[in-house]
Length: 506
Image 1 (cartoon, rainbow, N blue to C red):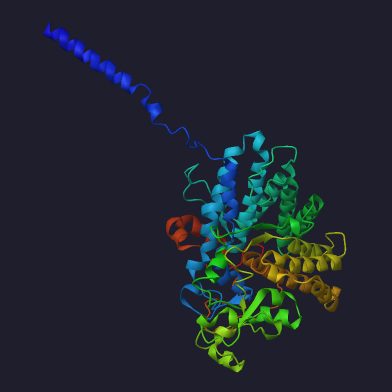
Image 2: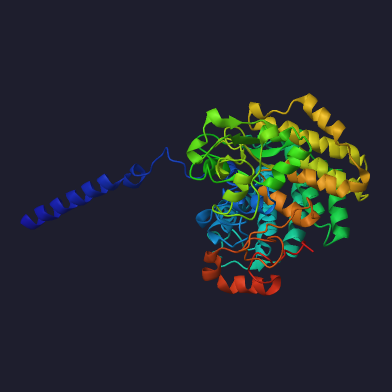
């Protein structure tokens, strides 16, 4: 009897346990948590993270002599023509860890989902944009195997040649831009154009125009073919088409963040840039520059000393450190080198300032050069004037107080007419100005075109052999972890230094 009772008791507890366990797994599932992320939101991460890091001020903008610092240490770079890999790696790390990774994920997620074909092709175009920036900056880089560490367990990607990357980028832009279809699902969550297919098409073809013109020195036939294909497709037609990312107090402009915090008193507008704008009575100088009159130190950079009067702006000369620069500052009648002009961080480089990637102004100037070369129809002069005007009008997007008055634009164009004999120099010098704060593009076009005509930075302690830095160096992390593939790339391209040229820089 006792055994029977024991069996019954055990059976009871087994039934009780199974009853308690029923639905237990379901009970522990959060029914309100997302099980998948809309790939449009992942794509937005790729868009917003394309905003350039602060390092572009140290290198790209320094190389093209738009900004300079006399200081060394963490901010050393183009100011001394030295290799500071803490800065040269910034663009690499930002783009590979976010833009490339996220676009690769989006493409893999939606490639077999017909309803999301527009998102697929937008991601292909943006990925192409990212690789143009990367390869133009570093040369040979991981391309085909990039961004596949999680999906394909490729953690040591091979490096592709820049020529192969450009060939594939042209293919991607051609196919993806043509495949965008306004009749299909509109990806309204997109923070760049709100899913506007017409604008995305213009962006794709404007980017293709940039790619084509980049090849003028290395493959004129392909350059012409790509340029004409882009023009036929339809490029930007106004500033309303500009590709830029907005920022706010939460998602800040990296350049603005640096220039409004740790390095607020340490970066100045370079003399070649200020001198050019001043010599030509360019109204953009008033929109861009500020000088803290009588400043004896960084703490004197206060509103009461600020002047935007273009007549008194003085750019910092190149070739000096924070000790030797005291002499030219004194010779110019300045209280200290802190009195040299700066980009106005209360207008142009606020933490919430927009970051422009591809613009109507740049596009019109490239069309001017294409027409000058006989690759495009239309008036070279009109394209040129449209490009200059567009950039002057674009400055209002930074701050209402950077607005260039319409009459000032008209006066400038009247006083500085287009001269056909100087076409390439005029066009590309204006491209330099129109690419202010877009360091990677200003650096790339300077190497491609040779304009503006800049005097090499005379700093005596430079580590480069040539006159100008030609590329940025690979991150130390790549050299130590992905060493075999890095060495292979170096064997093709040349030494991993600031002198080696990228493929199209002939």
